[in-house]
Image (cartoon, rainbow, N blue to C red):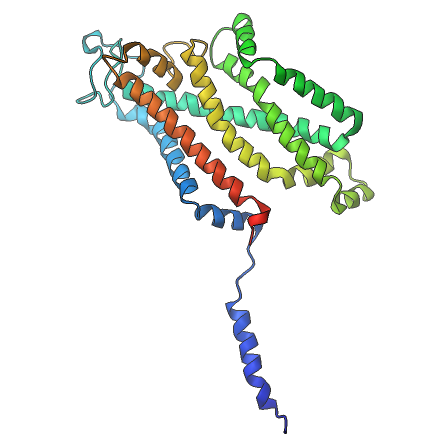
Length: 304
């Protein structure tokens, strides 16, 4: 059988066609975003968080009433008319106070997660990278702090400081960075034995350069997930403290303060508790949906 050049042309066309239909290379974070978009619950959570942030920024300006305006002639009014969420026991507009409370609650959750990220990442990174006796001492210190009840921190801070946002930030910052430090330490312990870390050492890179340029960036997946799940935990803790009277002071209003005020008239004026409790629940669900979606999207075992 005679072999001619024409016999190879279909093969070449097939090869070119295969190259044309080949999928373009996708980066790690692009792949994470593509898989996150496929998670309907996570995208629903992102939309809810965006709407809550918009409500916190714009909501107080939509009402004709300020969050601290009192009208004793409009005490305990049900929702409707000029008061969309009704009024409280002092005649204050609940819609404006809920929107204003969103600012405080969301700010506490986000800032607490950032503070814990900075402290926990540096602490856990140093502990895991140095290892040995330094790691033992640093982790024993974390265990000592973790063993002290959280309410004891809060009570001590209330004695030393006045109740308010400052005390809440300090209390949450003291406690919640420990879990972040443990997560980062575990990741660093597994990464510091990789070949590229040995190569960085041979090239003369110092401890801080290796931590900040090589180890910590490669642990951003678990860090982002931990931060996302820390936000609703901090919001719920602030609501719990405010419910006990250890949170922000009047006339400032967080969702926890509004829930604490609303439970006193639960039988006769249920809307005073319903709206702040509803927003707390929605916010916690939204952040947990996003956190679960990020955990799945950042899992390298699920990457295509």
